Length: 242
Image (tube, rainbow, N blue to C red; front, side):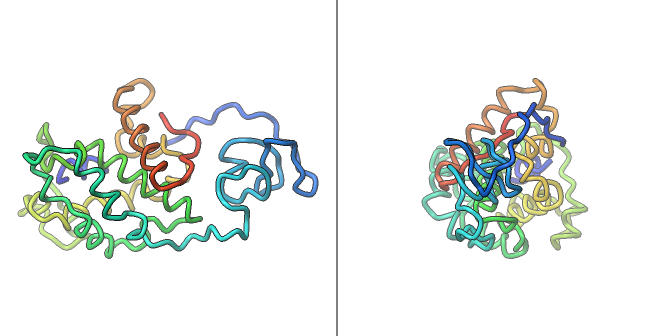
């Protein structure tokens, strides 16, 4: 992904008008409503998402086993990864560059990735990461940024352990370094805001697309995200486009 995966990675979410919440009495809400972790009745991710105590919850109710410790390797299976990269032609430079093994090797340096909150939160973060990676790299086809921005990975190199100033080409030559560069940006700029909704991740990666800046790009990112959430068996949440 070189500049593409870095571009991935190189906020505020607009809050919609919400109905006045109704306090649940002993977790008793009307049919079709969820009792949130704070004891209010309603619909949507704020009520039916993580911490939901009763009703049509998106994830298991509190104490129902939706713990936060998951194995990213178990989620990002060979089938999942190949399902993305197999969409590109054999002539694509990234076809034989990006691999699940390289992704997992790079992941060893960023153990906090995909480990925030509940298991479903972790799956949403993984889906978001791959949605942006897919969009930026054309399903892992591109290694070099098409428009050729400045290749200066000085800061990333200092953190990851390579000479990003004098040897920036290593990002395009070493798939593990490429993924590490992506993880570096993600953990620094995106990881902490994933729970605000997918729209916040778009703002963090390319805010110029938001608010009508590039609706096609935003819609493409959202479609990838929803597809991957579906594959991982998790509700995508609210606040998707920006």
